[in-house]
Image (tube, rainbow over all chains, first blue to last red; front, side, top):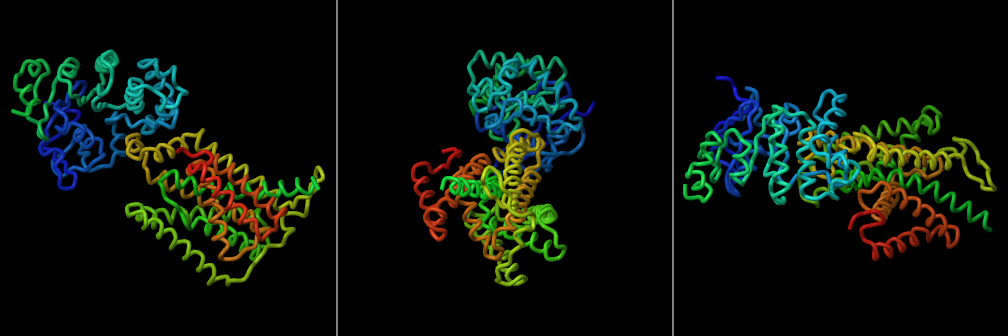
Length: 239
Length: 287
């Protein structure tokens, strides 16, 4: 069996005395979309932040392309090809849309690729092209989500991590966003998607892992999980 | 009378540009990492002494003194960032205030110990004599200082708003965590900010050394000027520091001329306090 692009084994993260996640394992095979499911407070954001290097691991391991990356700081991890569109977008609201995108390209070694990547992002999100000179802080929620995803794409990542991309957005906007994820998937991008809405996530993903109070309790193919009563139970917290 | 008044205003603008230059360093460091550097005025003082030493050793004026002062102070700025600032940033606000205040005293009294408390000065005609145009008589040294200071302050603004480096620095200022997700090392950007801020003070010090009194405690006065300029212009705003610096320079020299040199500081601070009453966020700061 080939090594998955990303492998997490028995991940444990603590915030001081509080336990963020206690035992999470999951694989993300190259070219797939993997959903990280679970109710609010289940630990989805913690897992993504730990992978991105924003918070240290307490125990367990994170391997990217067979190399351990756990314990490295965020600015060096993104250079390996893992980009995170974080919870709450975290845009540089004082700067222009285009500056935000160019900042996303910082990890690239070859700066000549920036123009081509910028064109690609503008092709995926034409709205961003229209607003390229506007300050990021003046945009709507949907546009901010587009910018967060576009900014993550600017580093030309091998793995794109999305933290709750549907949060707080109108249904039509969410649908368009998920169409975009489908397109990226077809173009060969590997995606790890944290999402609270099961139906949404399972629609685009190949497989999924369900988190419950900081533990991965269920993993499987998206199609199987969609009909599994255990998933519902895990959400309700009676599993 | 009007030509004298014009002359006073021109002199104020030229000195104000230098105020703007060293104040923009203070505002940059504040904007980047919310650190108030109480040693900022003493950095300017060090720049003056570098220019003084260059003159006494080599007989050279600001042409040689200014670049060297920039180099020395930028190095000092980076050193201070890595040895002191990074440590105290993790501590409480009081540690940050006392830390840079302690640095100010250390620098001030080290210079005291080495050079003594005497006033030193550079020969007035080091840069050139007095120029005359449109009926105004302006010392060449003041003209040089004002013009260079204005150009460098504008260049700093350009760097922050129009270059990739500036964009990265502003990104760190706005959200350090998000900047890390972009592959930006926050401490590299902060060290660069310290190099720029301290380098600007070095340049400002070397530029005014030809017409300002040089004494170890001059940093106290200049530090206060910088704080007033930055709070008047709005914390974190370089254009704000530029406008405020020019304004303070003009008000200072006008009140020195109209009321008396002894009262100029009083007038400036009275106006300043009055202004803050109405607009505490400064001219270009955000509320």
